[in-house]
Length: 287
Image (tube, rainbow, N blue to C red):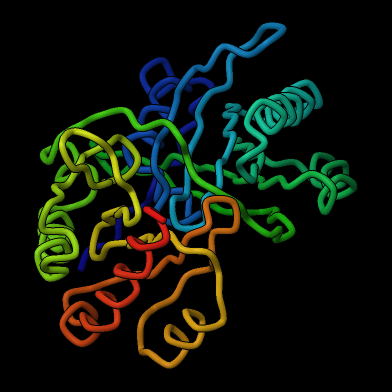
């Protein structure tokens, strides 16, 4: 194996690899930031009072939005204020979400860290340092989280049900997870036999006679499916889930639904329990 000395590139001084280029790479693959399996939601969003928020990312598992600002070169006070201001505007405009400000720069200075550390705990903010490294004719990006946020309790989900189709979700998640969603509906048998999947932008619901009846919804991911079962939180259902081997996510208080993470093997070994829970949800939803 041959050693190749890398060359660190200044994106700020580059004509080709500029801020727009970096922003596009992040939006193509948000996972490169190391913040989890995030989804791209919006770019260059015009803010009230002027300015544009670079990028909004979303974590559908934890139901959380990240307001991302990018700065090439060193961090400065003006950009810090702008990052916090955009985060504040977004959380006030969309209070149903939990929000986190993210600043990405090539050089996170010690002065910046000293100032921002005063806010951390009051303002959820993450600072990430990015380095562009050239290997011969190739370029790569390395992201290092240098300041993390304090963990907060998380809330809800997107309420906009923009219609899409099956191919949209196959591209967004994977063919296998969309197929698993179809298998779940099929395995639920007569409980959902009158319903068909309704593909929306941020989740897959169910409908009957062209009317949404979302007592159960799905969010396919790369290797599994998050299944949301709409039901008031009650001790009986809590005990059923706790005694199972299902991967249980936190209960969604605002939308009043249980959330489980399913793989193929989970479906096969827990179908009776899932049918029981969905039957209860259907009864409660229509009562």
